[in-house]
Length: 144
Image (cartoon, rainbow, N blue to C red; front, top):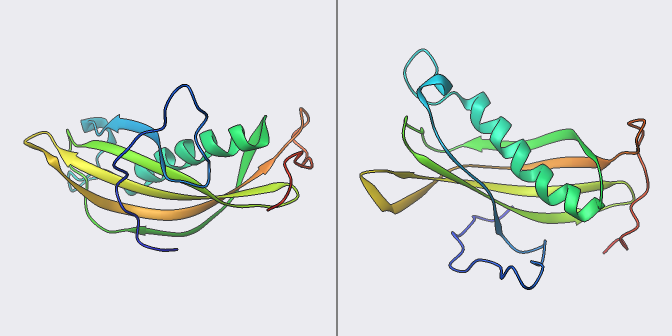
């Protein structure tokens, strides 16, 4: 996985975004309830946000329900503080017969310096398309 670059443009609502390109998948403020005993934002909270962000792209690609089956290579690069605005960017890395691999890049901005975004974590999550009973289902999208 290559180092992520903060996108400079956002997809147009009139045109569906290309899932293989980085796109903003989730934006959230870090809150006091999300801290660990040292007062930093708990890594598990960020991982949960990454899972939600990845699932949004995977579900769109699968045109239906997905389940997380693996989290590969998630790295925490910097701490997040209470009040930081966290942007999670995602892109589809690979589409298989039933699975979708999504890269995640998390960026944080302090309220005191909103133009100074920094990458705080990145990783790769794998989702599987599932049917109503929760069993894997084949994707209708051609594998590419």
